[in-house]
Image 1 (cartoon, rainbow, N blue to C red):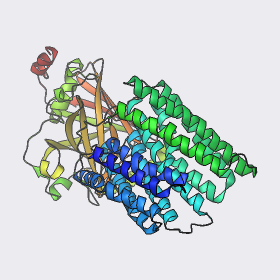
Image 2: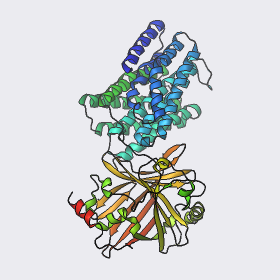
Image 3: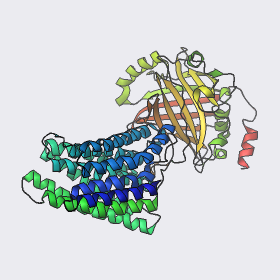
Image 4: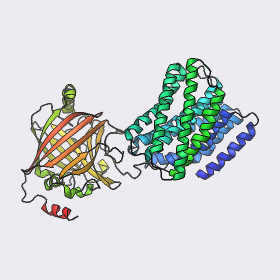
Length: 557
């Protein structure tokens, strides 16, 4: 299908050149070059990446409808009947809606995938400006040439640079903090530059300068990333080097406009920033990335979030009220810690009592002490009142130790959507509900994760925790690794979609010499620690040798 579209695009472009010669507009040719070749050229990078049926249906529709949509774009210029361009604009709007649908997908909450999808959103802006030019619409004080060049801009820099940046992010696993900052600048620079061009020459110069700095840093990452193919590496690095040159000319042009001194004319910029970008930046980058063919880093992820959402109040009777309980008997938070094994986590390296606690949780009593960070204490009093009202994640401002009473109940998989789900319901000495947490485990990319859902009013908070062993201690954390790998994180799930939260948490569990466990739970908000909970966990159903058979089996692995 893609090869067929390529042949059709070539015939369309030859027809356009034949019809417009000798009065050919270079800017019109450039925008059609993107519509006919670069837009379908990115299809392999963005399609067939989502398991959502709605997304797959749209992808098929885009491929099937592309020849007709691009044909009307050509007709709009050849016949001078501008309303033909409306078809292309509608096509790009549906592409943007598709991108928004994909952004809701829990697997796409990575900065590199966000960058790819933002390119499709900006393409809708290109569709609008192309329609405005073809239909001779008057947009503010802009003349036809400026409107056409804006269409070119949105079909090139705003559309393709974020996609190429996203493809780089799929391969560059180092300098992730730098990459994230570069990406956000690249994503929001088109908006900032557009505002500057419209309202403030000073802002325009600043925006172009920031954008240029981001592209230079982007080039640094391109030249320090390891590529699989020598040809792909040469083409992508050539593209980045030329882009550094052409963006410098853009800065010179913007500074000349700011100073009201003509340094470069618009016609010169069409050739420098348009023609050279098309054939020396976009084309080699597109070919290079097609050779490299980077896949989303979490393409094989299979994580599933709970479908149970809270009501106005949660409380300990919540699951019974929504008829989500079943008669399954679970003794622990997990059936077998072996299900969490990975290269970073070997269950046999944990102290036996830690294994026993997670697999036989009902045999243990828990005491807790909550400590709020000084900067968060004023908010903690408000939070305590609110959490008591809804009966969920109710953490006290009292600094004393208190006992947690707990029960484990089975949860219907058909209601929840995950397998072998159990609820760990904890109350305090006043019989107030502290937590109603729905536990499950899953494996993805040869790693095991704890998948914990806490129903909230009309939503749920999901914690994906990765286990590590540290000597004989257990570490469970939602904090992402520096290389961006893994599914760990904390998310807010609603019926409208899922978004990552600026929260992270880490548990450290260790066995002491007096046959009890101690645990420390740290939580961060925007990277600032705001909560620490200490736990003392001791066995109440005394066993002669806790988990002896399991321990012997694991040590034999």
